[in-house]
Length: 187
Figure 1 (cartoon, helix red, strand yellow):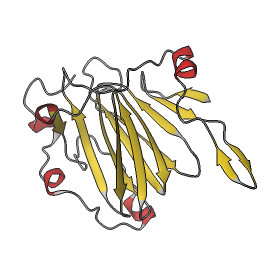
Figure 2 (spheres, one colour; figure 1 turned 90 degrees about the horizontal axis):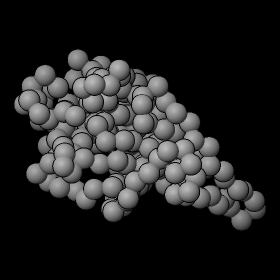
Figure 3 (cartoon, rainbow, N blue to C red; figure 1 turned 30 degrees about the horizontal axis):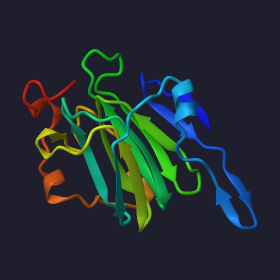
Figure 4 (cartoon, rainbow, N blue to C red; figure 1 turned 135 degrees about the vertical axis):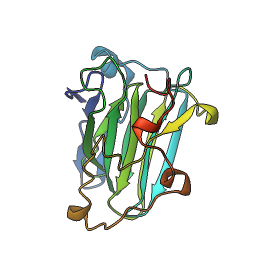
């Protein structure tokens, strides 16, 4: 595995070594000892999976303390644009965003520490997304902000992907802007 730091403290891209032959491919998608050697440690307690059609946008979500989550995410089939927003008030990258294309073909993973909002835009039908988390889902701690909040200005590159308007859940359609959040919702 190759672990690469991003400009955001604690946010890492993980690229497993993929072995391919006439039978197909094999790679280790999680190896605690390698991650620990890079200072990454989490007691993962829940795995979750979503399958999305092209144009589905899920996000931007996080869980507030005491149920905040570190996530390790990857794509099993299809491809998506994965986006995180740093919501840690003391961070030098506070309110900045980072994106990466995760695909079944590139096998990349993203390590997302606590304190980030997370979401993605499916770029192909039947995109299967897996994530490990170190705190179980707690509905009362779930938070979110609008995917298109102008204060953040995430470039979802909709024109390049040929998606006019993403498909959102009713809940995600109603998420507030960052400035509308009550005090204490951020990290």
